[in-house]
Length: 239
Image (tube, rainbow, N blue to C red; front, side, top):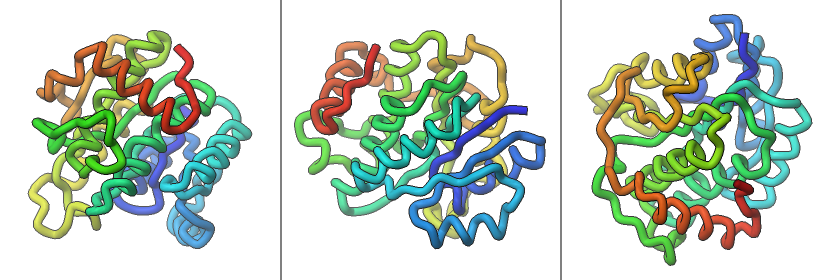
């Protein structure tokens, strides 16, 4: 049994992963944006061990969320699943990239971290000096994949992986999505309890290694990006 936290787990892939992991006997803590969503999801999945609450678009609430998580003790696995697809570049950046950076920096280190990226990251633009103005969904997923690579390098004692869930028919993906919904959370469920440090740094699609934009492997770019997030938040990533 593993103790697992999943951000953005009131619906979609986060909720489905939580439901599967609960069924497999794990201790799951959910995350909701607000109390109403927390109450709604607890009705659907009352077997969870707890729920933390915070709006990932707010730096203040992300800090509060980190305190709540740390009060629950150390986790075996944290899955950074939460994300938005919005025309508001600042919102996209804050939720998809800034929030997981802050939580990674502020929350006690688990054994395993899983970051949810997307195949749409391929070829996306990255403007480190203007992130809040230029981060669309694709570039946010390039950033989170690059951040995962950096974290794997900085913390060799943590097994850090990232996944592409594919284009699946969730509320975000829409009814026209062509990938299998169950496969969309299969990698997260598999990696959440996998005791194999050799997978650290890898990027998966449906439990198989997947090709990715090679720019994310550039250490200087990783370091510059992480430094910029530290400047924006005032929270350095100790390494």
